[in-house]
Image (cartoon, rainbow, N blue to C red):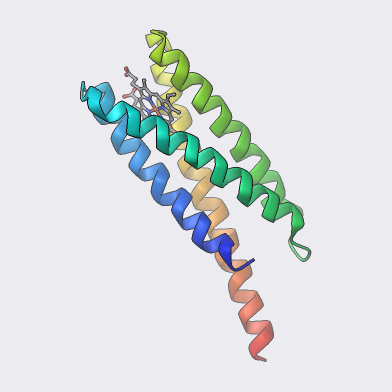
Length: 127
Ligand code: HEM
């Protein structure tokens, strides 16, 4: 489980970068779209790995599992929306933007849960 906080931080960092890039792209900086797509797809892979880790960890409550499943679905929807935006479905930009903040919220939440769990673990091993 040592990698979970590292991967989780990476996802959180990536989401923040994605939101900044997204607004740049929609403001007309077209060169950034490739990076925006790449980080989106790499992010999905990281989220899948984290989800697998959440399911394999024993002591965890049900919450991380539920949140990771929701996060995976929301990221999938976001990538779907992104490709539709690329195909010219401009009306979906609002959903893509709103979804971005849902992803940010869930990433912060899962980060908080992971940190709490790590703290508990290190307390348990030091006492
Ligand atoms: C976790 C992944 C992603 C996040 C958090 C994210 C976030 C954002 C945000 C905040 C915007 C600005 C929206 C606006 O101004 O209305 C944006 C724009 C955009 N995103 Fe993403 N995005 C993600 C993944 C993707 C992917 C995978 C694609 C393409 C396959 C994509 C394609 C686009 C496009 C084309 C725009 C410009 C929309 C426009 O013309 O206004 N995004 N993104």
